[in-house]
Length: 417
Image (tube, rainbow, N blue to C red):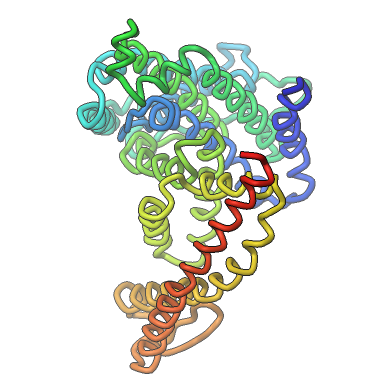
């Protein structure tokens, strides 16, 4: 691969990050893209454990949250005029904090692998979450730690008060951290992480310490999780005890797995999608977490490679020019699939309205239609929509499968495989 081809994706990503605020210029869009920025770093750091080294962690938010708290305290010290440090360097403080705590907790956690490691990570997470309610001087109690990002030393006249300046700061760190984590996967230690994930016995047999490999990966992951937490502290200007709880650890697992743990781009896709859903769906329905959970179940059952796996499995077909022959069968399957989706949404929203929002009356508005949630006719229509759509969708599976096999054979012939 030529030098230009090797760096073209990163150049394209940099251009896209620069151009996005000119396409989506509203305040809400800038905020959402900023959230996506440090969510990408957080998800990629988690995938260094799960996807690269095979370590399922239930407490990764510890290093994200502690990095955020240390950054917030550093911001307050700088704001008091005690340290002349510009704001763009403060995510390094969060990264060093995440690395420090990963060195401390990781030495114990990585002595075991598999289920035992997962349970230890869960225990560490619960331990830190409990300490957040006890050590009020550090964690700030229920109110958390507030700060002011504009009180730091100005760099080139920028005080990072406007959201556009904060976006570009987060975007720059996102690109740098993503490139650094990708470079780590190409190093010998990154390859050994894959070896420990796939066959730890063989890695031990050829002379490598699997515990040390896991420990190094754990520390590097904590470093980048701390950077993400520092950027979150700068963006929100407040850090609360909730960031070290179980919810952020579970959410980063959802982001990473839905995107695809087997591919470097997977956590990026998952972070972008889940952040958009978290912000957008919550404006339309109170049951948005149920939709996220159902999406996770569907991905685990039918697309274990994640969304990235579904997309990248079409890459050889696109290269050979055979992808177009799948479009008619995909279009045929899309109609009943949309029926099932619409029926599921109506079922969830109707049930949620009756169980949670019954005080608002029986009338409900969902999917651009209004109806009585207690009407037997409405329930019959929802069940019929689900049943007819599912049966029709099942009948399209053999058609899609046959077209996929034919397109795959044609691709192999064209590519000479």
